[in-house]
Amino acid sequence: MQTILGANGAIGQVLAKELKNYTDKVRLVSRNPRKVNESDELFPADLSEPGIVDKAVTGSDVVYLVVGLEYKLTVWQEKWPRLMKATIDACKKNNARLVFFDNVYLYDLNAIPHMTEDSAINPPSKKGLVRKQIARMLMEEVRAGKLMALIARSADFYGPDIENSILMETVYKNLKKGKKASWFADADKKHSFTYTPDAAKATALLGNTPDAYNQIWHLPTDKNALTGRELIGLFAEEMSADRKVSVLPVWLMKILGLFVPIMKEMPEMMYQYDRDYFFDSSKFEKRFNFRITTYQEGVKQIVQGKSQ
Image (cartoon, rainbow, N blue to C red; front, top):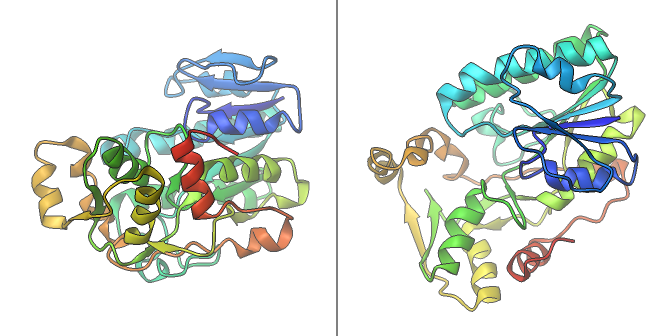
């Protein structure tokens, strides 16, 4: 049995489809899980409830933690450490391997222009401190020999049928509505994005590769990083839309945050947009024979409404 915690999210749905290449026993856990494969086992649950993670994990060989909590600092501070502890404890009790889908918030400010699995861990944001805490919780158990686990780390992501992506929200959806695309801080800095179908396929591959455990992996991402303006240009070309860009400065986001809750969460993360942001997945590329979707292909697939 391979179990997905957070099965309805941007990665969970595509991951369930990919896991069919490895097993016919997939358990989908979320508040309102929906079948992806005919044989999927549905496990409706609120993972914040005491004891529920243990029940959800029972009988699992591999557990994928791909939960996407509300993008709000207070929610992260309250819920992430508890969820990670509950997941670690449940995996240890059930002798299950754990795959944690992570982001790059824990890396040092100076690592952002070229991030690798060995980049310094020194988060410059409060959300990053939460990610550092939960990643440390997992790796301490690994180093102590109490848990088989791996961290699959992604850059900001984009892809078909996802909602919680900056690129999708501020570029694709704006252009679709006939509005100008928006960008943060500086549209002329490079910014890597991981394509969600690639991320899910790679996460399933890692979870079913025994020697991939007890280490950290950057998920496959097109090495030809583009600037915000270039990415907007790709979408505009495919959608026959205006290429103009509206750049939101930090001071304006702070004002908008008084009226739009999600904008209140953004200013502390702007260090990821005011400089080049390059996500290096060469470790994965050297280990696995994997075809990475280019930005040109990814944008085309999104606009056409298809995933690879």
